[in-house]
Length: 330
Image 1 (cartoon, helix red, strand yellow):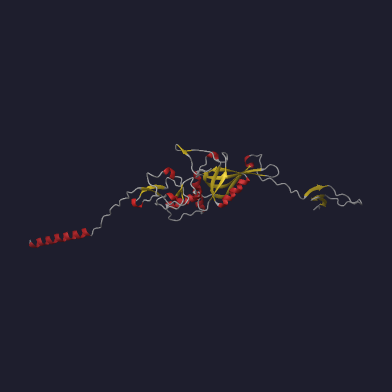
Image 2 (cartoon, helix red, strand yellow):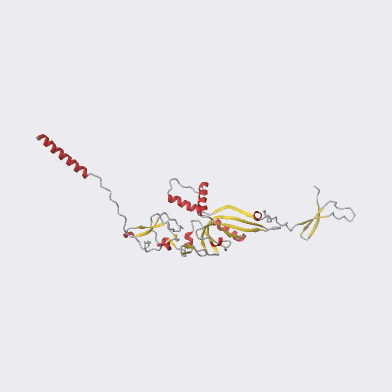
């Protein structure tokens, strides 16, 4: 009995010691990190390169530590989002970075149009009317094609032709407005006299020449055409999506491809394609005035009565001198 009692005491002491040892070396439990409870500031939802137009899905308000809030941040409850939407990013902003007042350019501010242009792009302005400007249903941010209408002169009726010379040009402004007027939640359609487009330097030269050749009209592109254009560019290998690219990177490549102007894929229609009474080819040009040639009769006889030449001759006029040149029968 004594041995049994001693064994029980030893076992109890060993169990107590082991329990204490394991309890002291147990892994500490992870504690939830409390989210910052400071004011909410406006941050970028994705990377915003230079020239990005601020939209509702590109930014959001996020809680920020109180001791890290700066005066240049846009705070929830104080910033007017209706005025921020449509502004353009002046400096590159990374995802999750707070937006500052100096990083955005509002429409009408100095340098807004230059900030809205993509790298290596230019802005050109062309005159339009209600007939050539799609009746005013073109707004900043839309994409259009340019159609050149001209007449090729020559003998007879002139050749009338319309040619789509450029495609997928982004509209930067109509007249001096870079935004659309919204009344009661509806976009107001208004007439305008000029349209400013985003183009490459070479396309800018083509637009300048096209304005001297004939009349330029706008052709509004559907939104669905942009997705189809991206698929075409992707299939042709002009845009390569790297393996393992994130969704933000793919979206950036897609936006760049959809905003890229298309040059060199022109189509045309002539008057003969519209009416059977119009020409379908370029009219021939008038014959040169010098030297003037006309067919004449038999050559005159010499003083002795012997004919000089009995075959046909060509009367050639060079300046004020006219001579008869015999024509060979070969």
